[in-house]
Amino acid sequence: MFAIIETGGKQYKVEKGTTFHVEKLDVKEGSTVKLDKVLLVSDGEKTDIGTPIVAGAEVTAKAVEHGRGDKIVVFKMKAKKRYQKTQGHRQDYTLLEVTEIKQSGSKATKATKEEATEEKKPAVKKTTKKKED
Image (cartoon, rainbow, N blue to C red; front, side, top):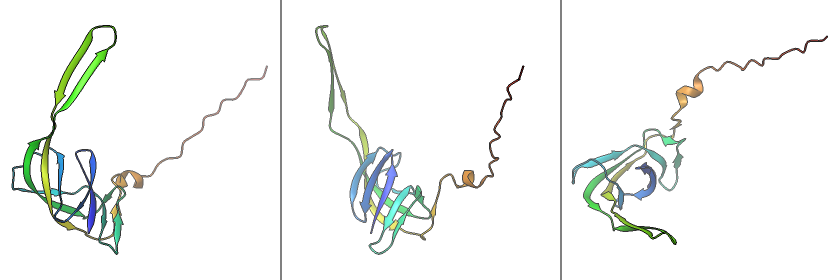
């Protein structure tokens, strides 16, 4: 069984027991995290695809550790102007280990379902008549 989830603006394909890095989450090490933005869930026979999120599906993970990624060097230079700037960046992350993938029902819901059900009035086309002299 696998799922595709979204967290931190990125999408991850996860299975039970896998570990992966996500943008830093505000949780303590060793605590559990419930990720409810599940875009797809498949158990081999049945696949639920959300529009955009699968209703009732949930991925439970354990926060293993917090850390910082490798340093990335940002170098800017303008030719013939004697301008050089070096800057570094290290991204914070949380290491998660998937403990459970819950697939509940096969109904997919739209995030904007309420907006779609509202009655919309048809647009009124305004016309102007030319004056004849």
